[in-house]
Structures are given as C-alpha cells and as structure tokens.
Image (tube, rainbow, N blue to C red; front, top):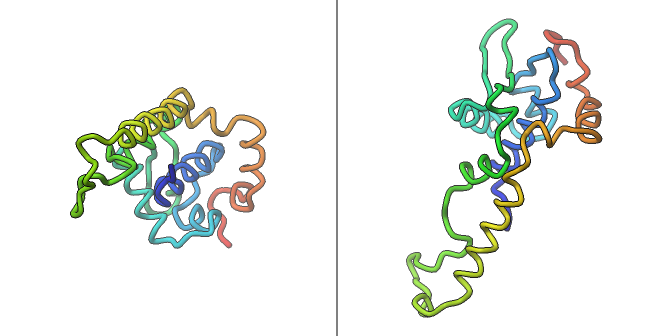
Length: 151
C-alpha cells in the first residue's frame, strides 16, 4: 500500500509540531523543513486544523501548534481519515473487472489494507517522536531557531 503524498506530509507536519516545544513554527517554515511547496503544506495544515489535530494562529507571534487531540491521535485513524475508505484496487470503476462477483483478490486486498491500518492503530503522534526520532527532528534547522526569528 502506498500513502498519498498529502497523507505522508500530514504525518510529517504532526511529527514536526510534536517536537516544537514552546515554539510555534509557521506553515512556511514547516514547508521549508520538509522541502515541499508552501501551497501544498498550507492545504495539509488546513485539513489538519479542520480535524482538530493542530491549531494555527495568524499574525505576529502566530504559528502552528499541536493540539492535545493531535498529540494523542491514533496514526491509523489519521491515515484512514486522510486516505479515505476506498478499496486498494478499483474493481467497480468505469471499466469494472469481469471477475468482480467471484474474485478472491478483492477480499485479500481488503484484509491486507485493514491489517495495515490495524498495525498503525496503537501508534500515536506522541509515539512517533519518541527517541530516537524526536531528537533527530529537533536537529532540523528551524526546530532549533528561536521563536519569532526568520531566515
């Protein structure tokens, strides 16, 4: 199974914020840290804010912070929400599979997809930044920059 780029980016944003400590990086800083376009990061941040996983404040002294709900959120639940509930294979799309009614592959793919999510369910955002990951994230240039400073 392959995650959408936006889902991968969302998980990395949440991880980055989980180690931010007292600082509140901006969307622009987070995008620069991850090497992604600001517009893509802004869309992901808006989605995460909509889901209550992070808070965004505008203006001077603003920035992004992880909410308590975000810190304790299940990675499996986040991935399910961002990826959608669709099947791994599109058996009923514009060109339906002729084997659709008697296919064993579809069921096997569904079970594999659920096993993938089930493996992520017990993991929280806070768990993802436990050592050794958290200290590595803290080593990112903007993670060390004092709040309110710019490049």
